[in-house]
Amino acid sequence: MDLIKIEKDPERARSLLRLSKLRIAKLDSFDEDKESALLAESYYEIAKELTTALLFLDGYKTLSHTDLIDYLKMKYDAEFKESEIETLDTLRKRRNKVVYYGAFIEPGYIRRNKATFIASIK
Image (cartoon, rainbow, N blue to C red; front, side):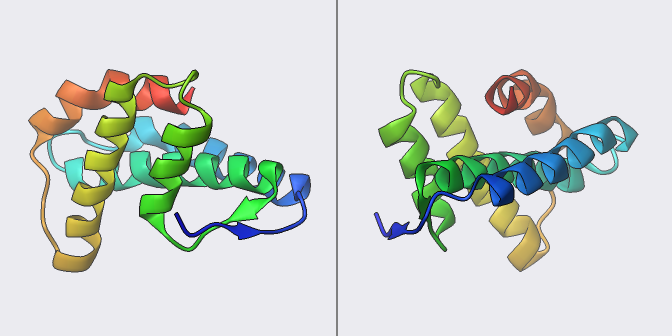
């Protein structure tokens, strides 16, 4: 894992928390059937921002999205079920396909995993 040690930065963590709250407020505005790729991307961005905030609180940063997931697994394993971590990692991979390859995500994926996304965010 490629973590960079920094001074703890609660202000940046608070800023990311505020940003994620704005994204959470927008989740209900998506049409799950027509905009499932955008919805998946939003769920991932929220999870990424919240995880990055945890790193800032703990005095670390990383440029790797994979390391964000690994950090949750290593440091916050008591707070997350293994299945939640795996779902977030799958979401990361699907989000990358959307962003980098223009892929679409079937609405069923969102419906099947929505409860896990929300539980992980909470």
